[in-house]
Amino acid sequence: MNLESALLKYEPIIGIEIHAQLNTKSKAYCGDGNEFGAIPNTRTSPVSLGHPGTLPKFNKEIINHALKLGLALDCEITRWMHFDRKNYFYADLPKGYQITQDKTPICRKGQILIRLENNETKNIELTRIHMEEDSGKSIHDLDPFNTLIDLNRAGVPLLEIVTEPVIRTSKEAYEYVTEIRKLLRYLEICDGNMEEGSMRCDVNISIMPIGSEKFGDRVEVKNLNSIRNVQRSIDYEIVRQAKVLDGGEKVKVETRTFDAPSGKTSAMRKKEAAHDYRYFPEPDLNPIKIEENHLIDIKSKMPALPNELFKKFTENYGLSNYDALVIIEQKEIAQYFEQLVQFTTNFKTAANWVMVNIKSYLNQQAIEINSFPVSAEKMGLLIQMIDENLISNSLANQKLFPEMIKNPNEHPQSIAEKNDWISSDSEEELLSLVTKIIDENPSESERLKNGEKKLIGFFMGKIMKASNGTADPKKIAQILNKSLSQ
Ligand code: ADP
Ligand code: MG
Image (cartoon, rainbow, N blue to C red):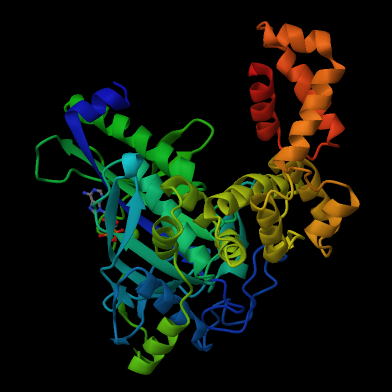
């Protein structure tokens, strides 16, 4: 049984829960710093430690983060809500309960658009988004005999984003998580770093015979530390569950863990046999009311979102879907592009410079666009110079662009002038250059005329050299062909 044959017989149903750690300065209910990588147990006031008698004080910044996400995802915003206690016992949960939202999540419904192959799109519907707190971290692999506990993470604010069971393939799941992460980053509320655990996914998967209406029993897979592993774990589970059903058995409802090296999942614990969390309203925190003004204020501060930019880039700027997607992948790159097109209307060329030259420079240097030295204005001037035939495309790429990076404050035209890179591209000048080289090399030109095509390279080289590299190779080729056919 492989994935293909499993999918001939069974239809997968997938729902995803994403936990996003919010990048607030301090934790959800006390002033302890909220930062990744601090020395263990150094962000642990008595509130984080859950000492008896301590009281939580709610960090209002969390509401703004949640509202931004809710508005971006088109959710219904709950106007009057409270927190609930979810009671369970675990070593990394010193209070013995988690403060979360059970009955009144801050956001309900909503959806996000994902893009699939062949320009297909699909709306993934959400069930809810609620605010809660993270637990501490149990570290099992540092000490051979003991589990170590780091409570720095206890009380870090989270948003939990839950989808309806509407995802049907591992690819859709991949795209969904990718889009949510992009959105969290655009909104600047979570860094989306799955390796550091600031964004975590739990994937619920079941399968049912094709044509059936009744969902199968599901498992929940945890510990997915990359989007790729979300996809891999789903593909693995589909095959595993298909084998179980084909063997005449039932899929056990359980929580499983994914092992990245082997690509397999294994049972972690039975699904808390209707685990009783004894939810009740949190008595130590006041209910929260969202005023209309507050919502209007948040709305007015929303940045342009990836899907709006996609629409603008494809419809107003005429970029291909592919180009638009590459540019909006990262907010800062999209912003740079938006600045760049203030200085040129040659949108396609501008997109190419950003996607190819600038991005590969950033990759080489392992830096972000914010550290790219050349301003969008100077890049715009460069593109103008190419458009006005002041410099050939190849010289601009190979010589001027690197030189601009070294001298980001200098006007690109003055750099080009100093180095003698300005094109002598009037047709006349080029023609006389070409004629001169032909005359200087009579036997080669005779052979080229007689069909020895490889000599084109010989002439191109000589002419480029004579023009000091400034001539546009395309134009030379045209003129050369014309001259020789006469
Ligand atoms: P729990 O509280 O046990 O985590 P939820 O009702 O909150 O359960 O559902 C968690 C996730 O599981 C949701 O994303 C939901 O869409 C998904 N889900 C529910 N039923 C199924 C199913 N039969 N197969 C796959 N996913 C499911
Ligand atoms: Mg759950």
